[in-house]
Length: 117
Image 1 (cartoon, rainbow, N blue to C red):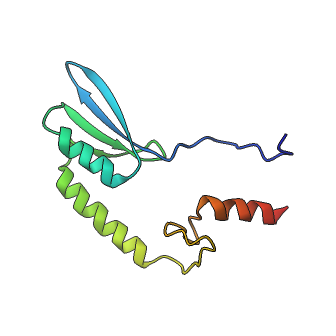
Image 2: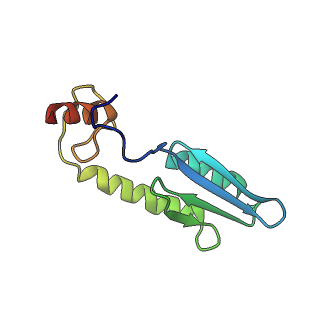
């Protein structure tokens, strides 16, 4: 029993690439990063009718019928760089390189919840 700390939602942390083909249907490829998703789209963009990248919140952020993957990748990289410059300083006690003040690593999130009680 968890004494009231049951999770309210589930999240697998993956980005999904949807490969749509008029003849074979839809294939979903789970990716652990945008870099991986971009590579999957590039490898399949000419063999499918459309390729889509779905973010962690189930929003379609790229559709091959509307935009070029190279152009989208360039804009995505610029935005990622811009956001990395504007991040608040945060020193993770677990030395996680992906831990930020507004996006804590799992261990810091656990610590934060434990400190509330």
